[in-house]
Every structure is written in structure tokens, then in C-alpha cells.
Image (cartoon, rainbow, N blue to C red; front, side):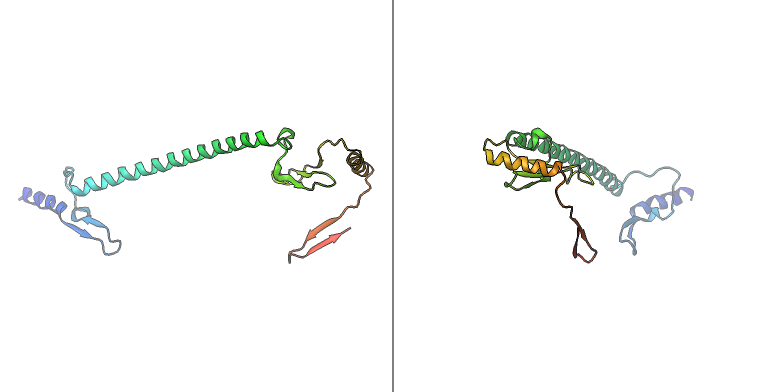
Length: 170
């Protein structure tokens, strides 16, 4: 009689159902019916084991892919910087960010707001112009230098209100 009961419960592992709430498969034996010894693995055990193994492999592959993508991005950035240095004879040698520069061409070539794109505030404003052999251009450069040294310029503060309107203050 005792063996018959154990045989009955062993057969319960081969009876499957579908949960009405989650729609997942389950064994009748998973419904709190236990045997003293561990039952032999069946097809569902194999499927669950393989599913877990594949999920782990997929996660490791995703991590490897993310690492490879990040390495490729860094390598691309380095190569781009090297390419830029080859063609950039103005900003690179002076360790200036080209994104901080505004092109004027006249009276100077560039106005560089050093730190505009990399810091919370501008570190300095640089008037960047090629060295000129022309007397007129050199005179203009000297004029700009004198105005700055003597502080002969007007300050203008611009505020943007919450409604988006620009307010100029002297």
C-alpha cells in the first residue's frame, strides 16, 4: 500500500496544468506534493534548465557587446582627435576647444569663450587672430589691445526672463 501511494505521487509529475492567472505551465507535483527522494528530471526540467542557461548567456553577451561598443567609441574619439589635430593648426596647439570659438574674421578671426562648452562658467575670452604683416591689420589689433587694457568698453548685461523675453541692462 505504501509503495502504491509513492507511485501515485511519482505519476503526478507527468500531469501538467496551466495557471489560470499567469498562464504558466506547472506540474501537479509542484502543488505542494513532495516525495522523499528527488524525482528524475523530465522534459520540463530540461527546458527550464536550458532556458536559464540561455538567459545567462544572453546577459553575458549583452555585457560583452556593451563593453566592445564603448571601447569602439573611445577608439573612434581618439582617432577623430588625431585627425583633427592634423588639420587644426589654430585651436589644438593652444589647447582650446573649437566649439568655444565664434568666427568673426573682422576685426579678428576668432573670439574664443574658453570654457563655454566644458565648464559651468567661461574661464576667459580670447581674441584670436593670425599674425598679420599688414600695417593696417596690426594697427587694428593694437587698437583692440588698448581698449581692453584701458577698460574703454561698455558692459552690457543680458538677462532672459522666465517668459523668454530678453532684458538688457547697462
